Amino acid sequence: MRLKKTQANGQAAVKRQKNVFLRMLDQWDLQILIIPGILLTFVFSYLPIYGIIMGFQEYKLGDFPGFSQWVGFKYFIELFTADAFWKVMRNTLAISVMKMFISFPLPILFAVMLNELTWEPLKKTVQTVSYLPHFISWVVGATLMFDFLAVDGGAVNEALMAIGIIKEPIGFFMKGEYFWAIVICTDIWKELGWNSIIFISAITSISQDMYEAADIDGATRLQKMWYITIQSIMPTIILMFIFQVGGLLNANFDQIMQLTKQMTNAMLRDYADVLDTYIYRMGISLNRFSYGTAGGLFKSVVNFALLMLANKIADVVGETALF
Image (cartoon, rainbow, N blue to C red):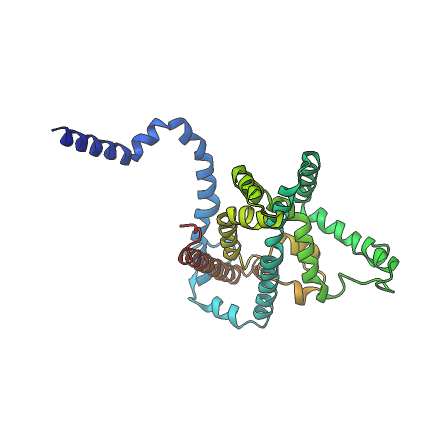
């Protein structure tokens, strides 16, 4: 009798737990708080999905999406056969891969090194200073770079000539060969501190008992950094790496547009023109909206496929996956 009563109570508890709407009603005050976020996501992320159909139509400004002449895969074929497309893909992948293998690990290393600082005032000062460039817009950031890297009176050229590395100033923004390095260095300067926040947060959750046990066992500082700090935040690193892979075809549109002066610097175009700037130039500037939509859809599909692949690999090897 008691067993039956226990089973009945368990089944009733399961039913109560499965009733999502009743739980939402009980938490009505909390549900109201997320309504603005839901509306924002719906209006700016889900509603525009309908516009994808423009990539398969001969859309003209003023047409309602979905009622233009149907052309099928015409613009996708035109995109893949364009002479500039493969150069654009080369630049996009080169910049993104370099950011993945250079810009991505540095915030992790910075967070680990910051954790090793024992003097709290210095630690907080370094942390605060590293965050500041993130809040500078790329308009201001690019202007600073133009001044620092200027041929006449630029701080970098003056310093290099003063220590005898070069005899004549280098035109950093006059040769495309330097552009990829400029993009990576400016990205590190601007986002290093900000990107380290999530890793610093993960490090603070590590139990101090583990470090104390390691001290008793005679572990060195490097061993504690590797076997405790880095290994403990590895799930966070894997998750962030999955997101990084999922955005492989994103090469920071704002950064490149400002460093090339809205792509008006013809000397940099062969190395600076990425998929985002190409889509913007062809789709918006030249009013080829269907062509631009086809390029945007291609980028989204590839990014989504890479995200799913990276997540699957992480799941197979036993690491933390998104789902």
